[in-house]
Image (cartoon, rainbow, N blue to C red; front, side, top):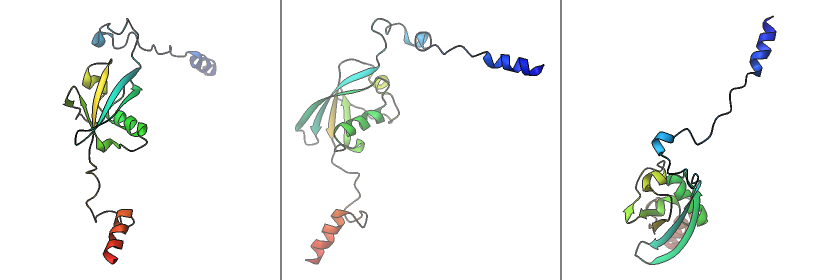
Length: 149
C-alpha cells in the first residue's frame, strides 16, 4: 500500500552538509589551507581623545566575520558602555573606517593578522541640544534648579 512507501521515503535523509573546504574554493584560492580558517581576529585598539591625548592600548578578540557595527559593539562592551558606537571614530593605517555597519571588517581591511586600529573618542555630539532633552533628564532638572536660584 501507499503507507509503506511513505514510511520508506521518510528514511531517506539528505546527506549532511559539507562545511568549509569545497564551498568558496574558487573565490578564495587556497591561502587558508596552510594555517586553517581564521576564526577570530586579534585586534589591538589604540584609544585616543579627540584633542590628541593617548588614552590606552587595548587588545580585543572578535569573530573573524565581525562587521564594523559588531566591532563597535564589542568595543562598547569592553569599555562597559563608556564608549558607545557613535563616539568611536575608527581608523586603520590612518584611513577612517567609514563603511556601513554591516560591512565585514576583514573585507574592509583585507588582512587578518596584526590588525592595529586607531580609535578616537568623539565628543558626544549625538546628544540632543541643551534644553531639548527629555523632560526627566538630570541635566534638565539641574538647569531648572539653576533658573530657580
